[in-house]
Image (cartoon, rainbow, N blue to C red; front, side, top):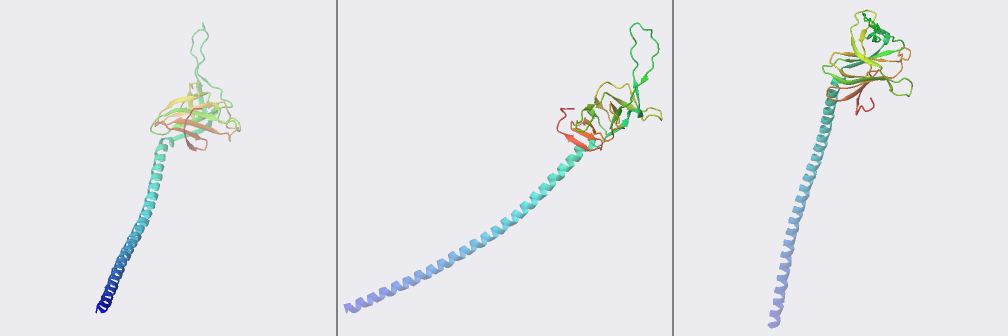
Length: 240
């Protein structure tokens, strides 16, 4: 009996172990399925997040392009605003014979009898007048003109005399330069005014010579304009 009981007991124990193993396997399978589901869910979440990140990258790239375009547009409007006054400055040259240049009378020697003295027209042979016209609504400052006297020499030839141009009231002259100052720079040109810069250089015989005018606008910006009316903003005017 004891042998039979022992055998039955062993069989029961084996069955219990088998059932336990089966239950364990079932729980393991269920746990594996749950983990698999969680992994699939996480993969799905990662996929959604990846799509969202990709969409955000596209949005960021689009915003960056829009910002760049906006900054370029602002810079363009700023350049237009900065050039507004400078664009209204005219620059040209005339033969000096087209301008009636009046010199003040020469001083009388000491002790000479006083009598009416005539204002004399200057000898302008071989000379040219560079003309700066301020057609803007505000003043410009420290206007100066230069000519390149020979190829490669640079803009080195400065004006000998300067003065405001006014109506000559004659058909023979385009304007009158009355009592020009012996200077190469005009400190201030008011709105609507026109100034002449008299240089000892014959542009009629040298029409291809380079020439330019420089000035500082009312906002303190520095500019150069050449004979082709090309306008260039300058960083400084340390040379002239």
